[in-house]
Length: 104
Image 1: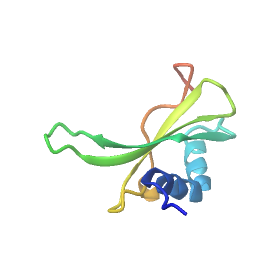
Image 2: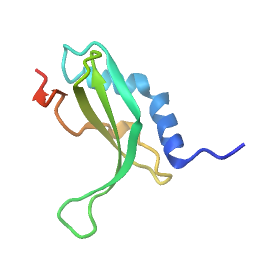
Image 3: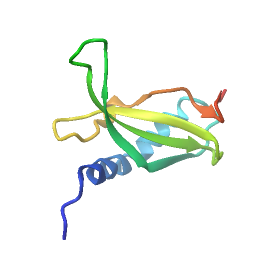
Image 4: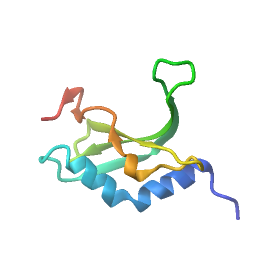
C-alpha cells in the first residue's frame, strides 16, 4: 500500500466536510439548491498582500451549482501546519457565475 499524496489528504478533509461546504455556498444565494465540486481542481496557492513575503498559502476548490453546466465558484481555505484546509476559514474567492455572468 502506498501513502496518500498531499493532494489526496487535502481532498479527503474537504470531502469529510462536504455538507459544511455545501451549506456555505447555499448561504450565498437562496436560489442555490444543489452544489457540485470539482475534486480534481483542489490546489495549494500562495497569495499576495503587496509585500515580498506574501500573505501565505491557501487551498482552493472549484465547483458549480444547480447542475448548470457553465456555473462556477471558487472556495478558499487557509491551511494548517500540515498543509491541510482549515474548514473554519472558508471563503468565497469570487462571485457565483453562470457563463461569465454573476448569478443573482
